[in-house]
Length: 116
Ligand SMILES: Nc1nc2c(c(=O)[nH]1)N=C([C@H](O)[C@@H](O)CO)CN2
Image (cartoon, rainbow, N blue to C red; front, top):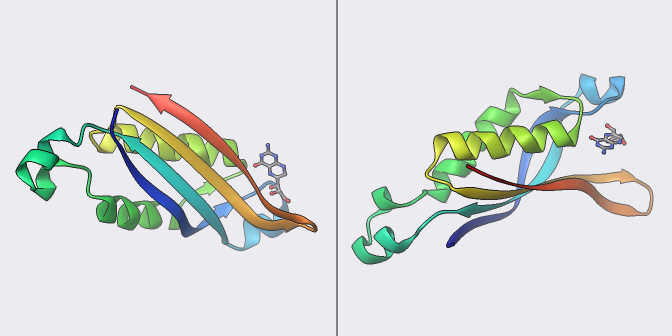
Protein backbone atom coordinates (compact mmCIF):
# COMPACT_ATOMS: atom_id res chain seq x y z
CA UNK A 1 0.00 0.00 0.00
CA UNK A 2 1.38 3.41 -0.97
CA UNK A 3 0.62 6.37 1.30
CA UNK A 4 0.11 10.07 0.67
CA UNK A 5 0.40 11.95 3.96
CA UNK A 6 -0.50 15.34 5.36
CA UNK A 7 0.96 16.11 8.77
CA UNK A 8 -0.08 18.57 11.45
CA UNK A 9 -2.63 20.42 9.35
CA UNK A 10 -4.22 23.13 11.48
CA UNK A 11 -7.91 23.80 10.79
CA UNK A 12 -10.72 25.70 12.48
CA UNK A 13 -13.85 23.81 13.48
CA UNK A 14 -16.67 23.70 16.01
CA UNK A 15 -15.93 20.82 18.35
CA UNK A 16 -16.65 19.98 21.95
CA UNK A 17 -19.23 19.02 24.54
CA UNK A 18 -19.10 22.16 26.67
CA UNK A 19 -21.11 25.37 26.07
CA UNK A 20 -17.90 27.42 25.77
CA UNK A 21 -16.76 25.08 22.99
CA UNK A 22 -20.07 25.50 21.15
CA UNK A 23 -19.73 29.29 21.30
CA UNK A 24 -16.42 29.60 19.51
CA UNK A 25 -14.54 27.68 16.82
CA UNK A 26 -11.25 26.13 17.83
CA UNK A 27 -8.13 24.93 16.10
CA UNK A 28 -7.56 21.21 15.67
CA UNK A 29 -4.43 19.53 14.39
CA UNK A 30 -4.99 16.83 11.80
CA UNK A 31 -2.62 14.20 10.43
CA UNK A 32 -3.77 12.08 7.50
CA UNK A 33 -2.36 9.00 5.86
CA UNK A 34 -4.17 8.20 2.63
CA UNK A 35 -3.62 4.71 1.25
CA UNK A 36 -3.72 4.85 -2.52
CA UNK A 37 -1.66 3.39 -5.33
CA UNK A 38 0.83 5.97 -6.54
CA UNK A 39 2.08 3.69 -9.33
CA UNK A 40 0.11 5.46 -12.11
CA UNK A 41 1.32 8.93 -11.14
CA UNK A 42 4.80 7.54 -10.58
CA UNK A 43 4.77 6.42 -14.21
CA UNK A 44 2.84 9.28 -15.85
CA UNK A 45 4.07 12.23 -13.73
CA UNK A 46 0.50 13.59 -14.06
CA UNK A 47 -1.37 15.09 -11.07
CA UNK A 48 -4.67 13.73 -12.48
CA UNK A 49 -3.46 10.19 -11.70
CA UNK A 50 -3.14 10.69 -7.95
CA UNK A 51 -4.72 12.27 -4.88
CA UNK A 52 -3.84 15.98 -4.97
CA UNK A 53 -2.96 16.74 -1.32
CA UNK A 54 -3.43 20.48 -1.94
CA UNK A 55 -7.03 19.79 -2.93
CA UNK A 56 -7.54 17.62 0.16
CA UNK A 57 -6.26 20.41 2.45
CA UNK A 58 -8.32 23.15 0.80
CA UNK A 59 -11.59 21.17 0.76
CA UNK A 60 -11.08 19.79 4.26
CA UNK A 61 -10.52 23.27 5.74
CA UNK A 62 -13.71 24.48 4.02
CA UNK A 63 -15.71 21.47 5.23
CA UNK A 64 -14.49 21.75 8.83
CA UNK A 65 -15.19 25.47 9.06
CA UNK A 66 -18.89 24.59 8.67
CA UNK A 67 -18.93 21.41 10.79
CA UNK A 68 -20.26 21.13 14.34
CA UNK A 69 -19.62 17.98 16.40
CA UNK A 70 -19.54 17.10 20.08
CA UNK A 71 -16.81 14.49 20.08
CA UNK A 72 -13.44 14.09 18.41
CA UNK A 73 -14.53 10.51 17.67
CA UNK A 74 -17.36 11.81 15.47
CA UNK A 75 -15.17 14.41 13.76
CA UNK A 76 -12.47 11.82 13.04
CA UNK A 77 -15.04 9.39 11.61
CA UNK A 78 -16.46 12.21 9.47
CA UNK A 79 -13.03 12.94 7.95
CA UNK A 80 -12.29 9.25 7.30
CA UNK A 81 -15.63 8.74 5.52
CA UNK A 82 -15.17 11.94 3.52
CA UNK A 83 -11.72 10.81 2.30
CA UNK A 84 -12.89 7.32 1.35
CA UNK A 85 -15.96 8.62 -0.50
CA UNK A 86 -14.38 11.57 -2.34
CA UNK A 87 -10.87 10.45 -3.24
CA UNK A 88 -9.38 7.26 -4.64
CA UNK A 89 -8.41 6.14 -1.13
CA UNK A 90 -8.64 2.46 -0.18
CA UNK A 91 -7.48 2.96 3.40
CA UNK A 92 -7.06 5.98 5.66
CA UNK A 93 -5.49 6.71 9.02
CA UNK A 94 -6.88 9.89 10.54
CA UNK A 95 -5.58 11.63 13.64
CA UNK A 96 -7.32 14.67 15.14
CA UNK A 97 -5.98 16.48 18.20
CA UNK A 98 -7.06 19.40 20.34
CA UNK A 99 -4.23 21.59 21.54
CA UNK A 100 -3.57 22.80 25.06
CA UNK A 101 -6.94 21.69 26.43
CA UNK A 102 -5.60 20.87 29.88
CA UNK A 103 -2.71 22.13 31.96
CA UNK A 104 0.32 19.92 31.51
CA UNK A 105 -1.08 18.18 28.42
CA UNK A 106 0.15 19.20 24.97
CA UNK A 107 -2.44 17.38 22.84
CA UNK A 108 -5.44 15.12 23.30
CA UNK A 109 -6.99 13.26 20.42
CA UNK A 110 -8.22 10.28 18.48
CA UNK A 111 -6.61 8.12 15.80
CA UNK A 112 -8.64 5.78 13.59
CA UNK A 113 -8.02 3.58 10.59
CA UNK A 114 -10.77 2.82 8.08
CA UNK A 115 -10.90 1.10 4.71
CA UNK A 116 -13.38 0.50 1.95
N1 LIG B 1 -12.95 10.64 24.26
C1 LIG B 1 -13.25 11.98 24.32
N2 LIG B 1 -13.22 12.59 25.52
C2 LIG B 1 -13.56 13.89 25.58
C3 LIG B 1 -13.91 14.61 24.44
C4 LIG B 1 -13.92 13.93 23.19
O1 LIG B 1 -14.21 14.50 22.12
N3 LIG B 1 -13.61 12.61 23.18
N4 LIG B 1 -14.21 15.95 24.54
C5 LIG B 1 -14.18 16.58 25.69
C6 LIG B 1 -14.38 18.02 25.75
O2 LIG B 1 -15.02 18.56 24.64
C7 LIG B 1 -12.97 18.57 26.01
O3 LIG B 1 -12.27 18.71 24.79
C8 LIG B 1 -12.92 19.77 26.84
O4 LIG B 1 -11.65 19.83 27.49
C9 LIG B 1 -13.85 15.91 26.96
N5 LIG B 1 -13.53 14.52 26.78
